[in-house]
Image 1 (cartoon, one colour):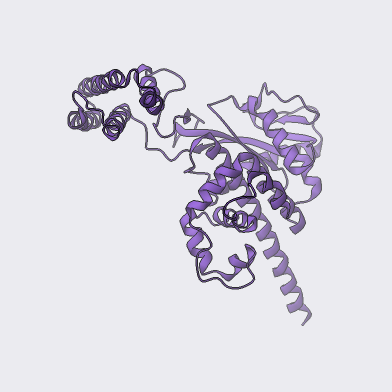
Image 2: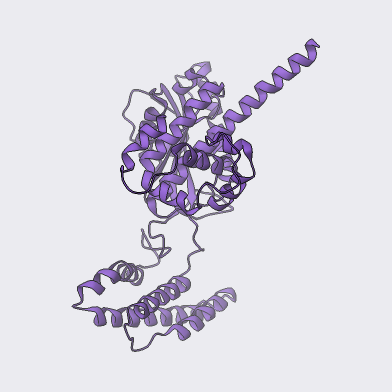
Length: 396
């Protein structure tokens, strides 16, 4: 009922009847609990009576309840604001299941991580080739005859650039890159001349031509570069890891209870902001979803010079003075949030985001947090039932 009330404003009382809200929310919960795709969760739903009961069905169903693409349209309709209500539901459920204590909401650990986007590793040769192919394909779709498409020559130059880079023959590699850039520039200008004065075609080519212009103008040392044509919002983020010096995606801030690791906030940010400048927004989201403002916030040294101005005390790792024994113990436990983030990545689909746009970044982060909370609640219930069985066995 709470989800029906929260999402009722997203639907109009006309046309085809919408799918039950409990079904859609339940499928997304199951998806991120078990790290499944949209197609996999729908297929496994048919053969699992427990999942069907969880989604509100009283009788066993032999057919899929929806097409997998319905989940995509539902996420787009609900948006990140609606997904915050989905995460809030898991926080309340974890508190009811005993996975976390209400007093734990006052002690929060915050950290940031990178949510990688589902893109190929960006190289100049690949970007030039894909941009040229996209321009030629769209020109052909709209009946525009180009002077020369360069698709065959560009593909050959891209292969040569990759081979020269592998052989560490960088002068030859740069020569092929220059050739690719020339081919792309010629097609870009040719398309621009052919559609000039046609308002309809200019509107249809505006986004693609803007991306190509941005690609042609960027330099190796520029910030806010274009790394993928289908995901222009992707940023290059360095977190100091030896195994992955650079990751391509968006920065996500996670707030979890210091004691149990219950996730209270999962905030996705555009670009690559400084960690300290994400603290105020993260604590604000945690306050809204938990219904209680934290008293202490534990962070690492990357949050020095933060932007938080609230009433909570922000304790930075490495601090020595003015700490009680409880604060020292909780500050030492701050690093437990790293394990929480690790579980969200390996088990909750935070390690590779397949959803489109910045809204997709925010939605995937919130659903990954919801899946982590439900796994925590399920583990608490399993421990509780095991304790009951052990007590009954001992009594008998």
